[in-house]
Length: 286
Image (tube, rainbow, N blue to C red; front, top):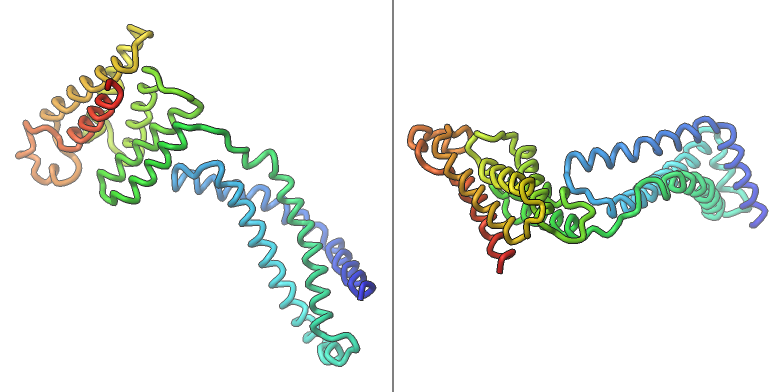
């Protein structure tokens, strides 16, 4: 049996060598295609964390290996039937199950080597090893959890804001006044990107954006601002943003339908943003 296995292994290696250009092109294709696929996941899902990419690569390689084994096994039977040797194979002194088993095992070794080449080309360079990032990771998880538990327009916008703020805190080990400013800026950008809205559209963005602007201006004047002071200033900015929405014409939601009745009233989405920042203030100054 060892001799038969070695013969099958040599057979598969010769086959791979005969089609070596196909094997090389396959490896090159997936070294390029797999990162592109996961980059697409990043852009579509948002917050597709780096530590998940290693599992994705492993799963992809296992899927490719399994599919290759399946096609190879079916291909054996089809080839024998097409060449008219299937009956001779059944009547052979070697049990057909053993022969096909050895062929499959030989194919596993050959394909496994090719799979290891693909995995090795990505190892250490892509995906990059995840680094500890306490704030970004926790806020991204919180945003995704919020999006799952609050399936509404406002819930989705706020969840996108939390994740945007988390990305803005990448690499930080603690949050100071400048960090809180970056969080609010990222929060506002996340809302604008997800909601396709702008300042002045009478949305939650008007409160969050105004809070970020006011805090940024205060830090520019007083770089040594404490976090508690930054929280108070951001809340003042959010309140100003809410008041500003009274003179804005609504463009989204039910308020746009009742446009005339909404004039002079504060936007409810902006109020929600202001209350969120008030909650941050209460937590940070206590």
